[in-house]
Image (tube, rainbow, N blue to C red; front, side, top):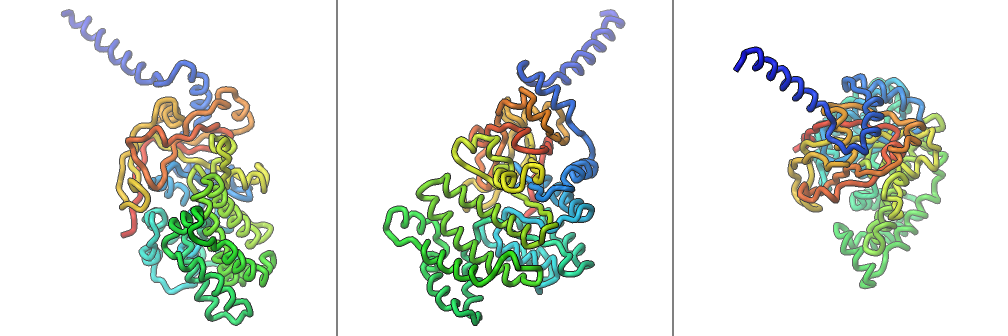
Length: 446
């Protein structure tokens, strides 16, 4: 064969292959949407993306940072870097995470130099409620250690707090509250102990308690825990509490965790929607009370799963009557005062259990399903980028059509991927999305 012909064929093949590799693997109907998002995508280094997002978030009352799994290293690291930037440069007051109040409060005292633990790692090793890896990991430890160093140079009233906003961890809260009542001189202390006894009898077996109440086999503890909570709350005026009332605030929150946990579990055997909504209402009430506690100029950060932070009204959740902290905070504070950041990945590895309470495994996240948001975003870039959404995006017709947004929880089965997508209006659910093509698993504290 002629040498010139061979060279010509080689050049044609190289050009043809290169051109084909740049053709997005999407349906023709999605081309307008793809081109719009590709034009909007901000592809920069992690540091530059942090700076870009922080500038958007800096003047907000509340910033919600999501995650599409509970076991992705990059999500924790990037939320840490963003939170650090918001605290240092924009004066944010506290960080709340989707964790237990009592457990995370140990870290709060540690970062403020107020307990005897030698390290954040030592505290994380005390976390014994599954899934321990969620807040017992090296990535979160980076935030804890930085926050301790940051606070060490500031007066107590200027320090940044770290809190858990979840309704779980009720048994630890119950034991702490009982211990506080035993040494309290308040008139109501003994009666509170008596009323807490009902729920105490079910310690460690909340699901059996819920089923028993639903089947009318046992009496509900609702009247008792509500009485205990009201008695403690009526003794204090939350709006008058200041940084100097930390022990009192901690006491009130533990009582609230017990009351709301009892309700959450009791409803779980009756109505899953009401049970879900009772939990997310606790999220929002905890964060809102922290905003009140820190004063009128306070600004807060909250970390939770995308299913909690991404406005439920812009997803299929709303059709099931489910709300979340994204919706509740936008409704209460106004959309202009809340910033919601979602995270997404195309493939990678993740920490999860095969079922509730099972040992943690490192699992493969397979490539996202075709026609999902993650598949489309991966065609824009295999690396990482951020999309910032504005009113123009929200009224752009192709962005007003829902498609699946991946959601992986603490339990996961990669073989049943079809159930891990929430139909979502992306530009309405989030103010921004940070996409990372391939992600890695967390490094647990052992």
